[in-house]
Length: 232
Image 1: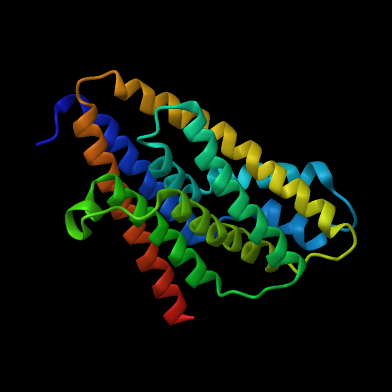
Image 2: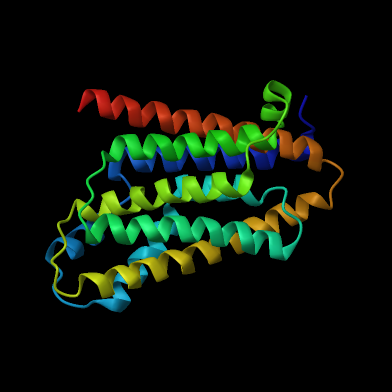
C-alpha cells in the first residue's frame, strides 16, 4: 500500500499526466496562435522561434516524462549534465536534419516510439530489465538513440507547416535553442521535486509509484498514437 504521505502528490502527478494527454488529443502540441504564426512567417524570426521552442518543450510532456526517468536516480551533477547532453545531441541532430532535408517520418509512429522511450526508462528504473534479462541496456546509448527519435518528433511537427526556406536554418537554430532553454527550466523544477523526496523516508515508495506511473503513461501514449496511425 502507498503511504498516505505520498498518495496526494502522486494523485496530483496522475491528474497532471491525464490533463496533458487530453490537451494532446485536442491540439497535438501546437496551439492556435503558434499555428497561425508558423503558417504565415517569412524570413528570419529568431526570438519568436526561440519562444516557440521553449514553450513546446515546457508543454511537451512526452519529452519531459522521458527526462524524469533519465535523471530520477542520477545524484551527481556531472552525470545529469552528461545524460542531458546526450539527449540534447540526439534530438538536435534529427530536428535539424529532419527539417532541412525534408526527411518524412510518420508522426504517429515517431510519437509511439517516444511513448516507448518513457516505458523503457520507467521499466529500467524499476529494475525490470535486471529481473527479466539479468542486465540493463546501456543507459547512455539508449538516451542518445531515443534522443534521435525525440528530435524526429519535433521535426515532424514543424514539417506540418511547410516552413519557407528563407531564414529556415537560422529559425531552426533559434527553435532548438528555445527547446534547450525550456528543457533547462523544466529540469530545474523536476530536480527540486526529486531532491525533496530523496531526503524523505518515503522515497523508495515514491520512486516505485512514480516510475510505475511513467510506464503507464508511456503505454497510454503508445496506444493513443498507434490508434491514430491505424485510424488515419
